[in-house]
Image (cartoon, rainbow, N blue to C red; front, side, top):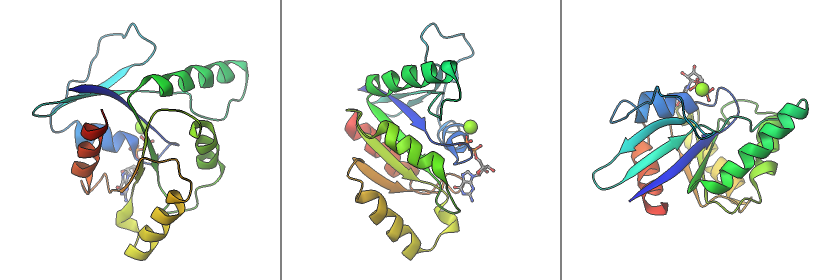
Length: 166
Ligand code: GDP
Ligand code: MG
């Protein structure tokens, strides 16, 4: 069993921490070869009986010009081609417009979206429950998983979820 996954989210939510430090530290092959496809392989997670290929999807951001608009279009087609889109948020501080923008852009894709609420080490249980509730109401996430990438918290659940969906 194998599948393609991409992790998106605004800068600084913790995407690299999750991929490189947490998942990459276990079993990974980070490819140095130039990729022929437009999506760069970030790493390959090899479990006991499954493999998850994480792809980089740059360009999910507010386009500033024609090139940006083109990149967004390419990125959105990528989101339709992978098996799971992971959307990571950090609600431990004021989030602003970019999260809402991304949510608007991915709302209509047919690919299952897993939401990771990162940096829960900075939140109390009540705050976490409120966030889960808030995102649940959007009715667009197949799974909502509170994690702390830095503390390796709930990462196993994330991997299990991916394994089930792919
Ligand atoms: P990216 O831009 O989405 O790739 O974000 P990074 O992985 O570079 O992380 C941005 C910052 O958030 C770094 O200083 C990380 O150490 C920090 N960070 C990542 N995950 C966590 C977490 O679970 N808890 C806390 N408190 N900080 C985190
Ligand atoms: Mg990064």
